[in-house]
Every structure is written in structure tokens, then in C-alpha cells.
Image (cartoon, rainbow, N blue to C red):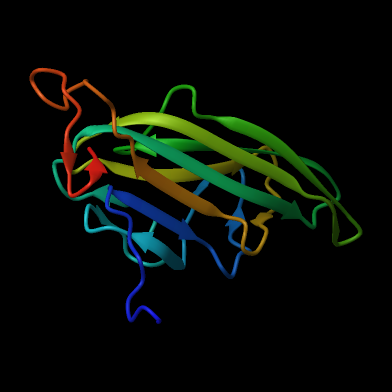
Length: 175
């Protein structure tokens, strides 16, 4: 038996990744784009190769935001790379993370990896973006198929779930 549709989670979720890679980043700082939508429930809006994810409905609560990416450069020397999470156009305090990558003689010699895992309160209309900046005017690239953004709703027992703090089940899913 085969499914004629893609399975989707029953809680608000989105998983985006960049299949082609080689997005370029400099000391001016650029926002990430994703060309593949693996999972997207109706709670989120995202346009392929756009820079922002928008929470469409008013499902306000805590969300788990995970971003991962690997970087390479062809510039001789070590490049410091940092990425951070932006909510509604403003950098989120405590979300910045650093790595380094290196190159020599027009070939990458060291690949840097970044992972951000952040718990964030979101409400309808909020936007999420990821920005990467380097410490060098030389270009740094995202390694193909490593740039991923995942946002998942976090069911929380007893907090703003019901007035009495009971656990609510709807459609056999903890909400």
C-alpha cells in the first residue's frame, strides 16, 4: 500500500533545507534561503528561495527552532563565521553561534559547522530568519545540502493549555 500524499505532522511544523548549497556570505551579512520544503503544515508560510518564515495562524506558544549549516571558503586563511536567529527583523539575544572555516590555494581545507537550537515564544504574524556574517570581506559559502531550518510547536502540559491545567487531547494528539 502506498500513500498518494506526503505525511504531515499534526502539530505546527516546518522543515526547510537548501539542496543546491553554495549560498554566499560576506562581512556584510546575508540571510539564508531554502529551496526545498520537506515538511510544512498550514500554520506556516514560506516562499521557496525566500528569506523569512511566517507563523500564519494565532497558534501562539513556545516553538523549538533548530538551524544547522556547514560552511567552506576558497579564501586563504581562517574565516570566522557567525549565524544568528532573527525574529521580526531583530536579532534574538543569545542565539548567535560561531565557527571557523579555512581555505588555501583556491580550495577549501577546513569546513566549519554551526548548530543553533533555540526555544522561542511565537504568535501569529511573527517572522523568523537566519543571518550569517563573516569577519572577512572574502566570500564564504554554505556547503551543499547542509543548510536546514526546523521549527516545531512544543506541546506544554498545563501551561495555557486549559484553564484548569488539564492535559487536552484532540484527535489523539497532545496539544
